[in-house]
Image (tube, rainbow, N blue to C red; front, side):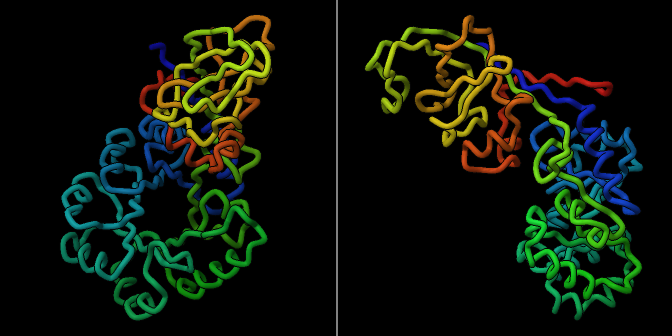
Length: 348
């Protein structure tokens, strides 16, 4: 079967990082490259952003950090959001990772197993997901701060909604817990950067905005995805297409079968709603998105090209996400491993 082609624009990632770094004001912009840089290749992406000037990188788990270290060299700081999990000590030490400790248990584990090794602290300012709660922090902050954490961070729950009262509530909580501390502080990912200077502190953590996603509306598009046409057939009035007979031709139609489906991260929920493009001309999906294939009505095209685009300038990750009832993050991180990946730009 022909392979679909995922094109990743490294110059666009660089431009997005620089734009978010400028919007971070006096704060230093790091880069979130967890989940294989949101599915786009952590090694290639991190090298590109490092060349642009980033020196602090954030991953989800220590295994991701270990993969990243050879690409970044010894000087870059690699922070691990999940902290110091049981069994992580050797990997953290060997690869020079910085765990962001999330609980009293993790604090005890880290100081006992790697007493001289750098660490950061993650605080829960109201999201109730990860981090030391305020009461626990108040009880132990004196002893923890004496160990000189290299970063104190928290995470905003509603930063993509600028007027949401949760933002101000979490800002107040974070300040209450950290004002007067000497360690660098970090509260904002992409959405928080866009909220303004009050949220920036010392370090920001651009994530989805690097990869062309909302809420960074000024982001340059980063990905395009072309799906090869395997076959074109004439469908007569009354005939159906795909599993479950969910689409019936009302008149004679030409239907192209494309080589991609939900096994490639093109979510089944976009069935009957999404479209692909022949250059600038939209073509609706017909029938159910199946595991490896999808059907497209191309009756209105004078000629059917060898491939049709499902991610392109006319339809970005967030537009496609709307068709699937999800968010751009899920579209990016779900992109499958069967694509032929092509990097373009100066760093390619």
